[in-house]
Length: 312
Figure: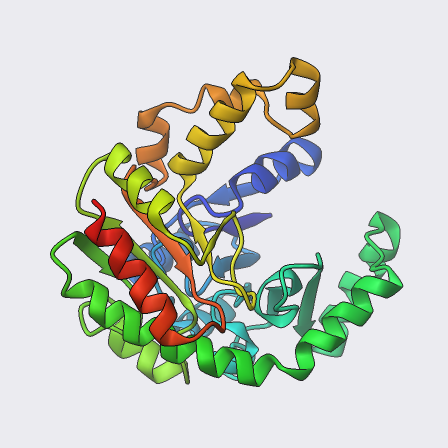
């Protein structure tokens, strides 16, 4: 089996699966259509898998084109549409065979539940369900209730998040303390025209690079008053994520904890040993910030971000 995974998405998951069932994979750039064509011609491809938009640079994959190319070779297409949400992007209608979403993010919408879902034809979903029965992973009743609750307000939340994210992306792009902004709704985004064709909204997440080094970015993050600092997105509360800043805070926590409590927090040696070269390999720059906009008042969020930028 040959799976195509653009970039290094789901890195830990991939290596775990490879060790268990010896999957083969080729990694390609989401925008490299020629690379995809060549790989389809040269290999026995059975599955193409990607996020769209992708994390953290929100690159967009031409789902219709990719689906047409893969289907000609008999390969299935799976799209992770979590960053778009089901409201902003209909990957099945564009030709994908299966769509996956993290229910933890926009669909649950309240940063208080863990879950995932898979959508597609009855034939494919039934096959997945049979395997799911073997592997487990049953959603508990309370989690199901919380997800259903979140779905009731999904359209309202996503509309607000779309609007806030686009307005703030435009402001950030013109700010002197911001080096670069990554958001599909901006004309400067490499897949802006594609995003306009296959999305009805551009999502509530904006990634941007602060004009400065790690310590400048830490100061910016520490100056923010509204968002939580956490590795998630899509909820009612705004969340700021910078992998390096999170590592700095984890390392700080480690100095205040015993080795036993560090284990309980999930702080392991591989995290401590993550080098600058490794971070750059995955595009994790010291000054890269991923900002998930919640449903707070736009004026409050704008004022908070601008005062934090002024602080640096």
